[in-house]
Length: 382
Image (cartoon, rainbow, N blue to C red; front, side, top):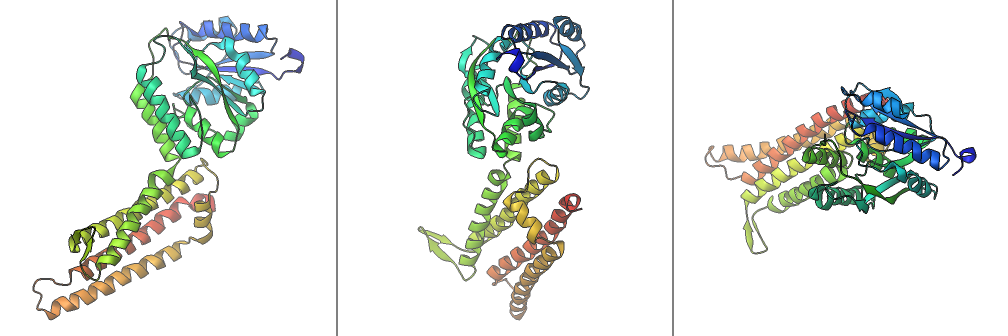
């Protein structure tokens, strides 16, 4: 790639007290760009270093920008925003990534990919560079869930060395400020239908002590994946609970029955009632999550959101809730009359009582869920 026909490349690195390695990383990146005759720059986004990181980075030839907001994502958001290049290469300044491999990333990127990751697991990992659990459990598990939730088939989704265009970055509209930034980039890329590729890279042992918390950061990535996939976290389990619960209520409302060699009576009907109510609540949490994500700009208008906006109105929700609650009250009134006719002795109409309470509570839930859903969507409706 010659200087005359290449876009400007910006190598962006976050930095927090990396005086032992930041200068070496900057020098390596600049040397690589010069050797490949690539018109480029190195941008260091310092995230509050109290050592000599800034001076050493500047001395090595980097342009340093400052970001007061703490966080991995904060540093990248500011650094990439300040970058002048049309093509962005990102990587940590802790000495773990080999910036002499930038040309291989550019080569893969030039094959038509929107985003290319440097795959450590398919490259060469220096002894002691990656903890055993990260390499053989943490990263593969996160890869698996990215594939299940978002259809991404990647060998190293947690790699911090990546390349993409400035236009792609602006299109993704990334928002997270912490370690979730890496996962958000992939999720948003998948949601936008971008072409993602990988190329093998080497991974070196870190010189200074790591600032990462293995389990906390892994959980933050997984949590973010779940929050972006409310269908799997809420809607599918909630629908299962509610379907089983409603079928159980209908089957047992007329009397006990035998099923798979088991005698099911009103005790099972109580469980069915619980599943119905829990299922509805979990489903609504999923809808809340989708609407909230849309309101905050994390996702676009999905089918569920479109349906909510098209058909849902607060007045309709209140009407449905009142109707269901009234049905519950009516069934309860019948059970109460029957109980009164027996002199308020032992309650024999247990099944109607269970059905009555279930419908009444469900109706109340629908009413207040409607209010909350209306509040969530109020800002975007305006």
